[in-house]
Image (cartoon, rainbow over all chains, first blue to last red):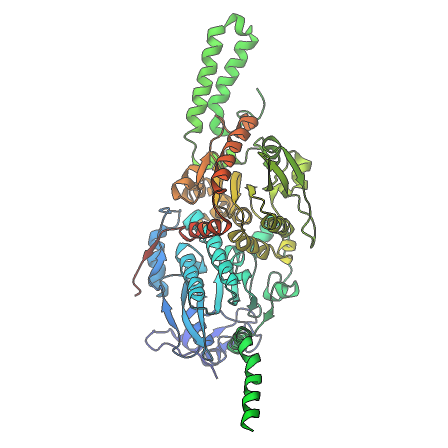
Amino acid sequence: MLTFATEAQEPMTITEQVALKCPQCRAILFQREYQRNLKVCPQCNYHFQLTAYERIQLLVDAASYVEFDADVVSADPLHFVSQSQVYAQKLVSEREKTGLNEAVTTGYATIEGQALALAVMDFRFIGGSMGVGVGEKITRAIEYACSYHLPLVIVSASGGARMQEGLYSLMQMAKTAAALAKLKEAALPYVSLITNPTTGGVTASFAMLGDIILAEPGGLICFAGPRVIEQFMHEKLPPGAVSAEFLFQHGMLDRIVPRHQLRDTLARILRFYSQASSQHRTLQMPTHQNTSSVAAA
Amino acid sequence: MQSWEYDLEFEQPLAQLAREIEALRQEGGRLEHPMRIQKAENELLTRMQEIYSNLSAWQTVQVARHKQRPHASDYLHLIFDDFMELHGDRTFGDDPAIIGGLATFYGQTVLFLGHQKGSGARDQQFRNFGMPHPEGYRKAARLMQMAGTFKFPLISLIDTPGAFPALADEERGQAQAIAANLALMARLPVPIIAVVIGEGGSGGALGISVADRLLMLEHSIYTVAAPEAAASILWRDTAFAPQAAEAMHISAREVLATRIIDGLVPEPVGGAHRNPILAASYLQTALKEHLWDLTQYSPEQLIEMRYQKLRSIGPFDRESQQ
């Protein structure tokens, strides 16, 4: 059974350590059972957000993940300053706060022994927003998959494009989509796993371009966020609008997969594709074996 | 003097001069004050030149959104010899916020695409103020695929506040429709020229503007988020839209400095709306030069150059991990 190891060196407050409240059904969850249940509420099936490394631990073979481009980060090309923040300082403080360099980690891993290129976003780092750093790392992961003929999995969790990088961040949508188009020409499969929440420019680029698109139950997935829709349209959204289930119902997703089945689902998908690409060999092998066994007989 | 001529706040000094000229004319026109009128007119032109060559980002936003600013259809009819609009995405509907069809450009067939904002209240409503639905992007995709098959170069004019953000658009896959176009345009085996003629609003603009040559009209804007939206998120108040516009460097001149675009297309003094015919001729010249230049490349070269161009967007840093 998968569980998340709590990091021993991190000092935790009493409340964090013992119990927390489910934001959906308000049930009190004990930390141990919460961890054991992969951060899913046992009462109402609410899927709490995972950090990128928790997600990797959940999905791939133990110790198989080799991270690359860990040092690629966004610069501050516009020297962006708003009322409440200086972006250059924000980048530094976010790094300190989260221990992450950027809102995505990319690398190589195996799932049940099957190799793949992997990119996993982390919502904690400036809302998982995509600037040049994120776009560059994801593009490199896609190019790595192209170079080494690997399938690709991207796990999205993002508030969209990072406004502090202006048009540079919008163009990361085109950049990542262009790399994915190349991957497709090379006939390499791409599985997009969309997690709560994924909105804006990330939904409207690589997240929706998967050959297979999966989502966790209950996740918020949309182009315009619910607040934008409500403000702009002056209409109150019905409960459950722009959720994974809503998208599934409208044909935008292949499957909604509960967290504890994700690894298995990905493993099966990778197997389907790898069997297909070696089809010529496997189709010919039985004939070859038959003739040799006949000859032997 | 038309009511729209000097209606923007920073044009008030010009409005004053224009009123003086008007007054002189009414006093007896050129016969009475030939020199004074000439002088005042010259001054008006000089001041206009001065003001328009130093527009702030927010002032550029106002010009880019000016209600008299020429739309895609205006340029379309001034630039191309023949045009036949084609309709529908073959799946759900036809979106009037994006127009597309076959056009003749110097004797050659090209595929034309453009956001269409609409002129006058009724047409604006019909065009949804240039904010496309998913079927608009899918119509564009259908036409782009046709362009790829028959080797029609693609010319795309960008002018939208953004893709339409209603629940019905989410239902029909706004995000998917835009994403699919980004991937499609990246590998389309024909020359693509996209020109921002007014507002380049976010993903809704990008959805038909992945190109070999991306140009902007001198007083247009291209932005990751509408200044109002950015202000409401980062300043928590839409009243800070001017500050957001400045901070995001969205005016054509500032975008040129980022090297994301390949050039500016000049506008007549005081903006395209003062002389749409001249604006169209500048645009026509730019389109012709870039298209002629692109025809020297094979489809494979175009695709590879386009990829490298997208690939190189954005400086990044190296930061060793803690």
